[in-house]
Image (tube, rainbow, N blue to C red; front, side, top):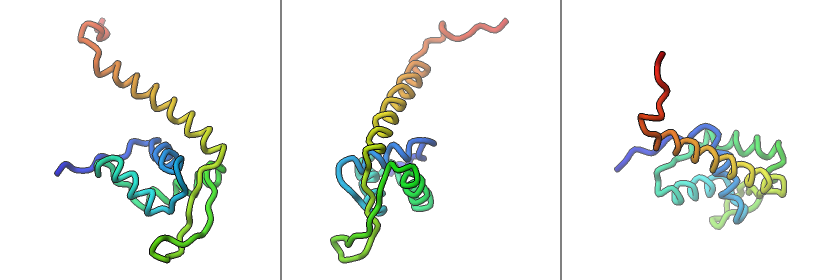
Length: 117
């Protein structure tokens, strides 16, 4: 089995917002969804998830409320706000530009490399 990939700096917020764009979820459900969606190639540590959720809540991209899980446990459910949806759109655009630029670098031919003087 292949070792999980590290989460690229700046992508955790994007993944959380995308995950919550369909339905409110609690932290563990967010982690599990990202792991399933990435076919276990990405694993989010709780030590990174909860500070990100709190930061996004502070920025009013998310709101949270206490509810009960399907197993009857009390958990904090996060829901994306209108501001969070706007941020998701901006993050998706930025990610598309970033991956396009990286693709250009990777596809560049040696003839486009700068010459030394």
